[in-house]
View 1: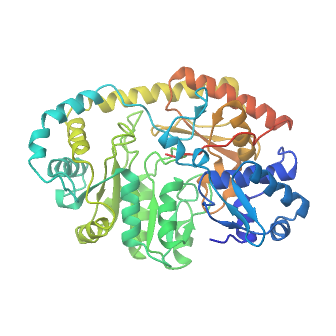
View 2: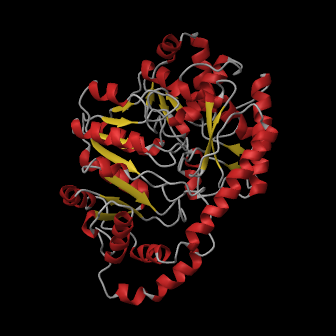
View 3: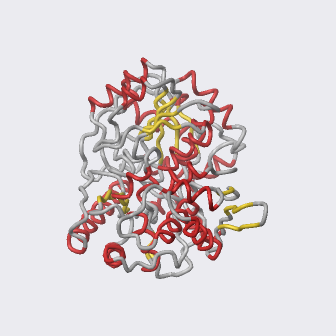
Length: 476
């Protein structure tokens, strides 16, 4: 893959006001693009001269940028072959999934996932008691365990969305569901609507299939500007997160859901509704009915990972009946089903009277309130709101310094995700923002905010020395 100078300049965005030398600022931005997967391994970067022209800087500056990245082991340069990205395993965005950071004192705030809650072990024990009956079957379940599909369908029907078990497909987590839907309804040249601020991996799944995303304009609400976007051309799908939106925590109103559902139906655009955070309702607010109430073609995504445990890789799709078989056929290319035992575990969790879910919510609510208090004390100039659900706070910084702040935080043993990663259409708009998950114990959150405050002081004073350590940027 060859990345043009113009495209790379767009991804890099604008320089930060407190970023120090230009070459360091550009190198830090490019480093984050590589680490979080927006510029993938094997990509050939533009020449130093072309990049200098696109950025409006001297060639000496871009020469130093590439030298910094070579020293960090993130690119290699060869005469006649140009500069090519190479991502070390330890520095890649997937490394936080496979292992803890090399430094045990490092705090990773790049993913919103808890250790297993109280009660989860009991669910595994009960599932093990039912294992003999499962072992009498082949274990191949491309659509899912019948008992689990019935329970999921019952949950939708109970919430006023009549659903038959045959409309449910159990998947390997929400990402398995999103990727399957993207492969099935997307295609080369098709366009997908995404929110202007959104969950990056969800948008990436559709970009990987079609390569064409139409992002809504960035505003105070993630769902403004739909009508103008629909009028701009033909779209195949729209990927949306209406409930405790990731990363902002916003909730789509009932009126907005009705407008979206009807407008997308008129333009024959399939809504792909990510409800994986709907159960993480910390304050018990009354959520509007699913957007699928307003559009019979809607495909709804659900998951157990956020509400219960990331290691329970069980998600699902609620699809209109005509879409079920195409989804199942597309799935058979990649896998033949989700872990049957994990599905048994989720059945037990769904039937425990809500005790485990209540424990998870209580823990998250206390952590959220603690993090809000620490930010108010240690970083009073940073603005945020208290989300009624979800697992993250969405911060607004006093200056456009998210990227240098994240880069410098690594020197304070704090791993963060830069705001631009959540803005698929206008990454520069993310420089005023930062996502902070509250999925750590209170004492860890206190220390994380202390380290963030130290990094902020360095960036604000112009004394930051960012880039001396690799950044791990898992986003979940």
